[in-house]
Amino acid sequence: MSRLAQAFSRAREQNRAAFVAYLCAGDPDFNTSLAACRALLENGVDVLELGVPFSDPLADGLTNQLAAQRALEGGMTAARVFEFVKKIREFSEVPVVFYTYYNLVFSNGIEAYVKAAKAAGVDGMLVLDLPPEEGAEFSAAVRAHGIDSVCIVAPTTPETRIAKIAAAATGFIYYVSREGVTGVRDQVAVGIPEAVARIRAHTQLPIAVGFGIGTRAQVAEVAAQADGVVVGSVLVNIIKENLAAREKIVPALAAKAVDLVAGTRR
Image (cartoon, rainbow, N blue to C red; front, side):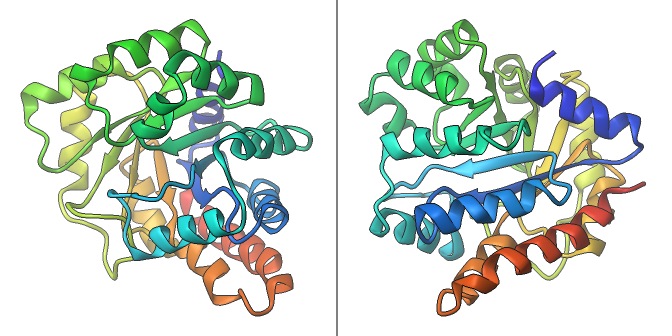
């Protein structure tokens, strides 16, 4: 059983949803980012969704765009992202999922990139802009190297495509609960129970729900319906808000993780 499968299975046995936390690798610098990830992993996070910095993050709102920009300006590169994961593996076995864009994979050579990711300790990959109809080469590579593929279903995804997307996934399905880009919202999106039910009809994989979730109450609302809850922008904002006093980032993230993870209990 993969680390991802174990994480969701453990959460299910404990009658809670798995908590999936997003941070951008290298934001605002390598060492601070590593300490930030450690703070999350040591305070209840089940899966770390690690953003690979990219100059054109089209699926991301301003919060995560700026995080990627800070990481790139701080010296993060494709090679250093693998080094970053290796450092995480020195203190944690929590599954790591790359949140990335296809250009980064393709331009470095699909086989070579996936092989390097596996060697670093990556458990899954979510390639945001790669539709399953065009992802045969990528799918073959991740399967060959034992990395799980995470695929996205959106509110606008027609029923006929959900089956195709589900067939391409091996780790979990990420239901993007809102149209548009990432970012904190005042309320959880409507229609999540119905959407999760539609997806469940096509797969036995875990279903995690994200986009716009940032409070314990919102986590609890989603956890009642889904196998996992994905939280990103509210965590990234903690980094942004403490750039002038970076020593505050780690304790603030630790406290926020404890608060949010408490909402996953059913």
